[in-house]
Every structure is written in structure tokens, then in C-alpha cells.
Length: 458
Image 1 (cartoon, rainbow, N blue to C red):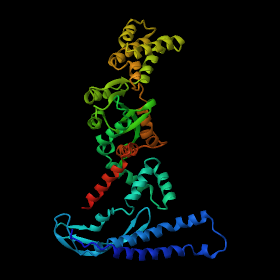
Image 2: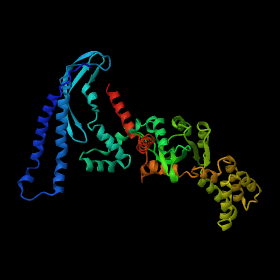
Image 3: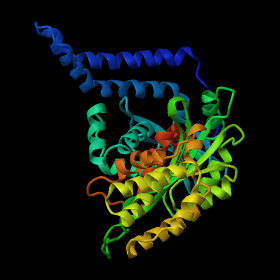
Image 4: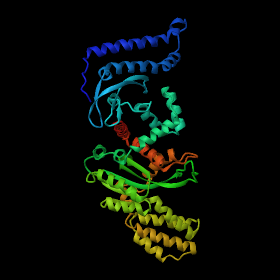
């Protein structure tokens, strides 16, 4: 871009003050009836009048400031083509309406065209970070956060009530999906420096804090793409695989680190597990690995956290034990006492004794026999993942409540609304944005989104 001369500090401020005073005079005219009538207006009446006029007033102030600060850019006659670098002359001035949260304004921008590249561009757009849409990044960021919590119709309704800016539900839907596209795992999951900072804040210096990684799946309502020539067809529930990484604080308090959920198969989900493994300073923490009976979970743990302590979810295990107890003894006190004795021995890390006892058990019926055999296989597959009493003494959780609450908070409360069916792509975009908000990395996602917008302008 051609070099422009920067204005001195005195000139632009004097110009801005003059233009701002004109805007204030226009605002005061809106309150003339208050000054003329005898009764003292209420605070509510004055507040409502300000709400009716503030965007017009602040829009004028914005326009005045930008036309003052960017005066030399507005007069720019030559600019370098972003494609080939050739210096080209200005073709015309294009006026552009811009909508921001403070207010709307019209900005005249020089337009340049490079005949060699066939490229037309407005250099001032990139300087001021003006995106192609009417509503700018500040509006897009706010509407996306609202739409991540509420149905699109309700989100835009609340947004309009709070800001006075009218946007459509389609705009909210389109914006969230576009931002969600830039919410990659690399950005949504905190980096090693941030994870280390949270570990250090909890560490007492005497022992390593307990860090828990829990994996689980949550079924999401999805629908096929469909189109003009074909029907959408029936929806299907597909599993969103997810993990939650957290520290165990004092009094078993959970200190959240990261959540990540996506509708994908285990092989594709492995990329995110590899990423989180590379960001955990494993020498600073004692890692506990929680899961239910799904083999894909334990396969990933063994590959990326071979030194971690594997713990089978206590409640998932107890469900299997109680199911066998009821098959064998019926819904009786004997069944409950047997199941509780089994769980006690598993808590003492006596899985071998429990398995031997099951093998000696005489089944009461055919269903009981199947259930006993199934329980034997289950316990043999997980025989090194019990010892619940010792895990509790070491400060490790024995239940997967952390990931279950993440499933509900991240997935269910927004995706599983009554009558909602999602395209897989849109579902995953929503999950990524919700994870970013929950992880405290939404600001970085917006930076990614902003960078993608101006990359397209070049």
C-alpha cells in the first residue's frame, strides 16, 4: 500500500470535537419536549428516550471520529495491489453503511482495481477491520454467544431487546456456523502454558495435583442433508464423543481445564486426544483416566497416557453387578446384599476373588447364567481398573460425574431441545463454540474468525 502521511495530533481532535458537538446538538433536540413541559420527567422516561436516540448519536460520533482519524486514507489516490503488488490508481469512492453495537454510520472508502489481477479492493476495510457483512464483528461476536445458549429465534429477540439492533434468526444461525468453522481444537483447547498456569494455581508444592481425563459419548439428534430434489428422511441419533479434563481441588472441587465434544467416530476423535496429551505437562500432575466399558476409550488411554491410572466408573460397574444380582436372586434383599459385597471387594481391589466366586456360582436360570458369564467377561476386561478405596485415598474420583455433567451442559442443554434435529456439520459447529465459551478460549476463536475474514478480502 502507498505510504500515507499521518496527521498531527492537534488537527484531527479539533475537527472531531466540532463534528461531535454537532451530534450533541442533534441529540439535545430529541429532548426539547422534556425541557419545555413543566413536569419533571422520570428516570424511566429519560432512559427510554436515551435508548431511542443513543445509537443515532453514537453512530454520528463514530462516523465523525473515523472520518477524522482516517482522513488521509479517505483521500488516498494510489495503493498496492494485494495480488501482484502493482501500484494502482483509485477508481472511485464507495459509500458503505456499517452497523456496530454503538451505532450505524456511513463511511466513504476509496476503491482500487488492478487490471492485471482482475482484483478490486478497498484498503481502508482491512485497516479498520470492516467485514463484508452489514453487521460488524462486535455484533457477530455477541449474537454468536447468545445463539450458543438459546434457540436462534430467542437469541435474536433478546439481542434486539438489549441493543436495539434488529437481526434475523438466519443471521444468527449463519454467523454461529461461520465462527464455529474457525473453532478448531487447536484454538478451543487451552494451550500448555495456560494449562500449566491453572495447575500451578492449585498446586501446594508438596505433592502433584490430581488431573482427571474422562471420556464418554452423548447421543445427538441428527438429520440428513436433504435438498430440493430429495426428502430429508428420518433423523438419527449419533454419538458425540467427548472428553473433559479437570483438576481435583480441595474438598473434591472440580477445577475445569477443557471440554471437547464432536459427532465423529473413534479414529477421527483420536486426533483431539493426541492434541490434549501433547498439551498436558504430565510431570506436574498425577493423571487419572476415567471411563465406562467402551473399548475405544481404553485403547486411546493406553496409547496416549500409558503412565496414567485407569479407573472404571464405579456406577457403570455397579449397574452390571446389580443386574446380575437381580437375575440370580430376583428383586430381593439377598440380591442387594450380594451386589454390595461384590462392590466392596472390588473397592478393595479383589477382582480376582470376585471372578472366582462367579465361576463357582450355580445359575438360578438361563437368564442368570447369561448375566453371570457377561459379568465375568466384563470384570476380566477391567480387572486392573478397580481398587476404588485406594483411589479415593489418593484424591482420585471413582465416578464419571465430571464428564456426565459436561455432556449435559455442553451437548444436551442446547442440542437436545424439543423437536430439534441438526445437520452433523451444524451440530459440531455449535458444540465447538459452546466448548470454547466454557473453556475460556472464545476470544481466541474470534481472533481466528477475524483473520479468516480478512484473508478472504485479500
